Image (cartoon, rainbow, N blue to C red; front, side, top):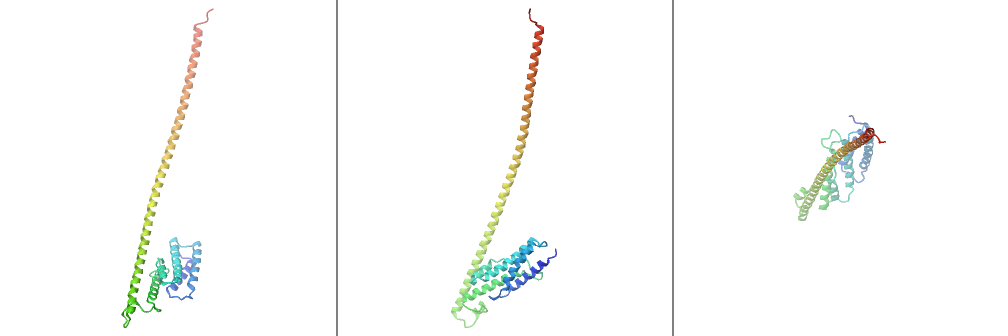
Length: 256
């Protein structure tokens, strides 16, 4: 199905936002936040449009907007450690925004953002202002004092510790999600079995009710038949006694 004009404009603006997010922005940069707000309004209009895309595409659009909003919120955090931790929980889009992208632009932005946060953490831990000098240059530069080499080694230990904590946190979250999924599936199976048992009980109750109704009708008919037979028997008996009396009177007349 061909894309509507609204969706084409939405994709262009989304691609522009991802391009701006991939660049290093200053504190005075305001366009991205305004563009993301406009994207939210366009997404609402796109959901109400008669020629809206599929639910899967809309979900991916919403995912990319949430990623950009989370990126903006992470950049407003005061410390680089908090920024790096917030970046770990961001979920970029899964599909390319435009056809020319080999990898989704939001994933590229996510990796660049994590790299910037890591660089800022290194700068803060080393106590330097510029982030241009890499860790390898600090180690191999001639004439570097001993305390700076020790600081670089401490930086490696701190970064490794943070990395281990992040991996452990991600593993714990994965295990928690896996356990939650297993518990949900188990609960669904139990509910399904209970529903099947309830359905069988209802069917059995309906069958028993039908049988009870049939037996009640048969009993009622049998009772009616019994009453009818008894009535006919009484009539026959009374008739026989009446005829016998008449015959008796005829055969044995009264003596004069």
